[in-house]
Image 1: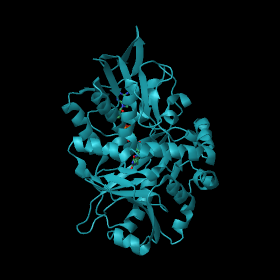
Image 2: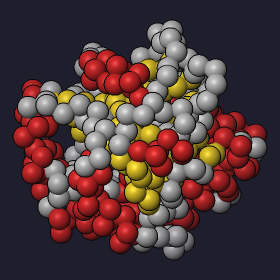
Image 3: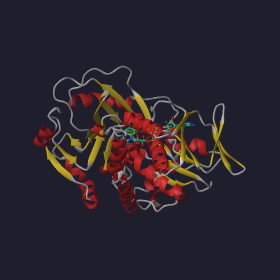
Image 4: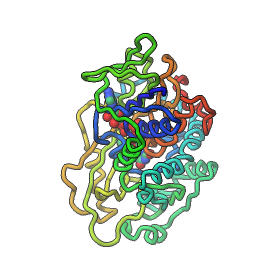
Length: 411
Ligand SMILES: Cc1cc2nc3c(=O)[nH]c(=O)nc-3n(C[C@H](O)[C@H](O)[C@H](O)COP(=O)(O)OP(=O)(O)OC[C@H]3O[C@@H](n4cnc5c(N)ncnc54)[C@H](O)[C@@H]3O)c2cc1C
């Protein structure tokens, strides 16, 4: 049987492993950690087609001033990081021009459209379907005029057939009685599901893979080489030989490509979360985004999880959670939240490529190596469909959707 190693057991890696296992490969999932604790642990768990409306859409350049001067809670820029990555930044901006971004939005939507069905398949197989809620999510504004600023966004949703409803203050109160009456307008984005804990879901997928005979190795890979045509993964104390390799190490994927194949242009949109006790009584039914203050609150098994926007900074730089700390008082204005839960500040690194599309496909420089990383804000949603596409490519079957926009050789 052909052996495949998948490096990285976040949502993308485990989804690749499950799909490859289903195709009959002898699959080993390799991660340096036995716990799901990186990006797939701490996200908001929202599976939303509306996330195809990329950050680098045609509204980015007109709004650039507030981002450049760190005047928006949505974005924090580290200037030295930005200067070091000026090439990435200029390509990211270039991709925001409408003829590029609208194409990218359509491509991402084609991927995200399969996010809920693919998750449902694996949730069902792992006995966890009850964790999925299909109640949509809310994008809320503190003024009546707020929602009027989403005309372009709404037009994109309508073009893609994404089911939305414009909300008044009364609509918001009847959908989410747990919210305080501070939101005056909003959007209910209905084609959206959410889970009660993305990290726990990822762990259940790993458990399912192992229960079906998959192998797991806990080791830190320092480099990848090739010896007499065989792929070699260099672990701390051991070398692993593989016929095929899928690199799904999320934000660390480029570190492993160095010296082996050309890294892809990637920057990190760091993000933080913190948990709060859920008071007794009426609780939040679905996640919401405060579009004015740039935070999301989701009801997880660990409590209310408040997540913040993007901090453009190196993944290895020390934590600087001031963006999160700035939004927490606004979250408390919106929702009755109890005490902070322990030392629950967590940081993750959204890995973002200039066109905001993930890399899914063969490594351009190395045979029998596939890349599956760069899923920015949508990796929890698109992990399972990514895994399916990768497995179809490894087998050489036609892919469920046209994978051309995601091929790594576009860079
Ligand atoms: C604050 C925040 C909120 C978000 N909200 C959402 C959301 O609501 N919905 C959504 O769809 N997405 C969301 N995202 C994005 C999503 O979390 C990511 O896109 C996704 O988790 C990426 O998954 P991954 O498997 O590629 O990476 P990861 O989960 O980071 O997994 C990579 C794995 O590789 C392993 N690894 C790395 N290097 C090595 C090595 N050298 N050797 C061995 N193992 C290694 C790591 O240990 C890790 O387990 C959010 C992200 C953040 C930060």
